Length: 282
Image (cartoon, one colour):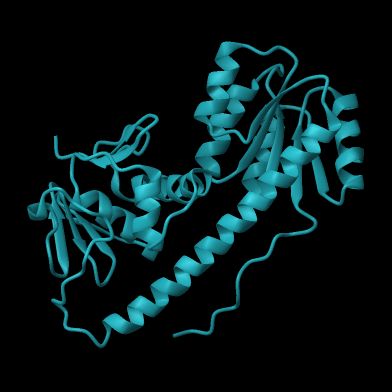
């Protein structure tokens, strides 16, 4: 096993991007957040923000909702396509139901009204970055466990049964052995290879976390599993609701990108809003 470089640490100089068409607001936020120790860059429009996101890495974006040319709703939609795990704090002087729904759908960290409450904004950013650091640490632990499991599997029989971390009401839904097959998808548990039937057959490699969550979904087809249940399947222990969502949602996004013909309209891994996800055989 390759030497692990160690767990990621929170960056004391996190990179923030302020997106607002008002130069006074941008300058004020830049100076304020700079004094708090953050590295801050600015964009005066949605187009400028997306160009920066294509070439630079940011930990968090502070985004105004009402801008000429491209509004914040469209910026969030495109930013999520480029960076599913990007932290976004929404600012608006004109709160609307549409903008609030868009913020929720884009998993915005918070939805804040102008004029900006400086202490509230600073607390929101700090909490979001701390949560991200904890998520990265959990992902590091998951990767370490995955490496250890891979090493152990090399000494096991290739048909050794793999037990599920979830409890099923129907034992027939828990297949044993190396391969798991549901509908058009066949999964090699040991090699973490997902094979999609078709002409030609398409094969993709999964990470340990992706494989663990996909196994849980495939073992209980057409049954809705919460983020908490899926996180338990991947980590082996319970997480709080926020932590479970932070771990599972990016993983589901990556699985859809790898497996679905049209990831934005998934047919295999479906969402039941407010409840969780299920592997569809319908």
